[in-house]
Length: 280
Image (cartoon, rainbow, N blue to C red; front, side, top):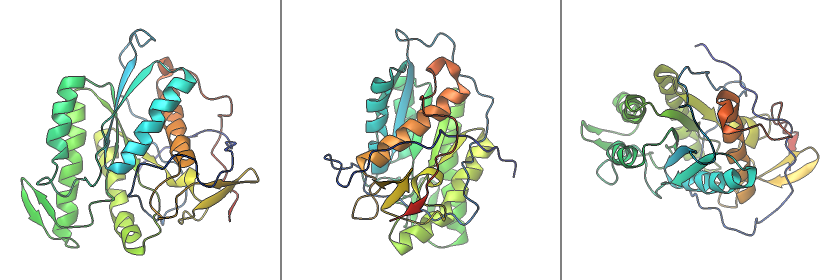
């Protein structure tokens, strides 16, 4: 598989904190990657429309499970803090995913959102609520069966193909590790599906593990960055802290800016991979 390493920003100075003062919004995250830690962000040929400016900002739509709510909220905050010519619409929905279209049909709802909002860029996070039988318009697929993987790929492709049809650039977030062993194993199984389908569709696969965990890629609540103890995850083992969400939001923006220069300039501390020294 052809993969392009992507530099996501320098050793970022993040202030140490325990509780962030604001409760993180998302409730479901996880994956333990077994491959070498790297930020695999394929370069894609799809271009952002011309004329992006403060008066005609790029429209970013964030969708997915409750984790996407946290990413979307901090993308809104950081877009304003960094003065980026973008607007961020946060449409994450708790307890949803791609497995249960009978509960919430993300492809159908995304199609409606895309028609109404005409986003330039889509940021999506799925998977953490999908450890169950798939119930989709195409039929059922029992959890843990070979048919489940094939059916799940179909659900991912629906999102990517709808975006491609409308010329929307996609950043598909690859989940990070979770403290729960079963959820971790499940997300370890499906994370490669996201990567492979993103590459197939010319989308950007954006894993968070390389810069939110120690070098092993395993779950850790706190990490040490440049000698400072940083609370990355909350006590339940699934949420990010507000600091963690902010870090992911900044790195997503850095990746976007590196590919689409009309979106702004990298942060002053940008320039290399985030170095995580150890775990506390």
